[in-house]
Amino acid sequence: MSPDGDLLSIEPLELKFPFELKKQISCSLQLSNKTDSYVAFKVKTTNPRKYCVRPNTGIVLPRSTCDVMVTMQAQKEAPADMQCKDKFLLQSVKTNDGVSPKDISAEMFNKEAGHVVEECKLRVVYVSPPQPPSPVPEGSEEGSSPRGSFSENGNANGPEFAQVTRGSAERPEAQDKSAEARALISRLTEEKNNAIQQTSRLRQELELLKREGNRNRGGVSFIIVILIGLLGLIMGYLMKKA
Figure 1: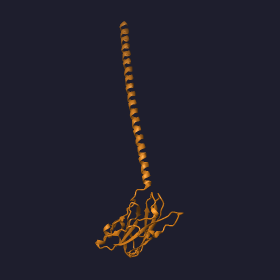
Figure 2 (figure 1 turned 180 degrees about the vertical axis):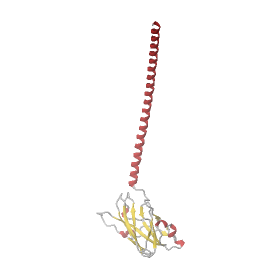
Figure 3 (figure 1 turned 90 degrees about the vertical axis):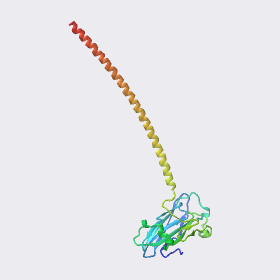
């Protein structure tokens, strides 16, 4: 179909990312509703683990626009010749007035169910960072990558266009924070075990002190009894003499 369909106008038609290693890169799409009806859309890609799309589904109100942010996860290696074979597919369909994004379902984009679904394919183009050695020809990709074929129900065959999820790839920052959290938990657990051992030793020492104190009190009581007995004998002796 024509990139500029009857339902939505899409700008731009190429997703251009200024490629840099180990850095997340974003670019935006603007969807403009050309009709007086509510239009639902859904975004798919051939590489869903590599990209995050917000929102990946939504509603464009009549004669209004909607911005979609596409984020490429940080890459560890640069592709050969700065060429990218990834593609996106944006599907759109008229829907009932008053529909909200939570009402969107896969069935709405099923052509076999009789829905009129417009589709627009978007290329991904890597743009060299500042001070490039030579400009990258954007049109050199044509014919270099296999094209995905689409079945009548709007699903892709071959290199499939899978629906993009939010945060579909784990980020390096999250991995670093997770490692720090595990190290902190390990250190706190060790400190807790040491504290428990120290508490146990203190309890044992306290029990020993209590036992020694009881023995000492028992010895003093026995001496007092003996002294009282001796005093009683002495007093009885003195009374008899008197």
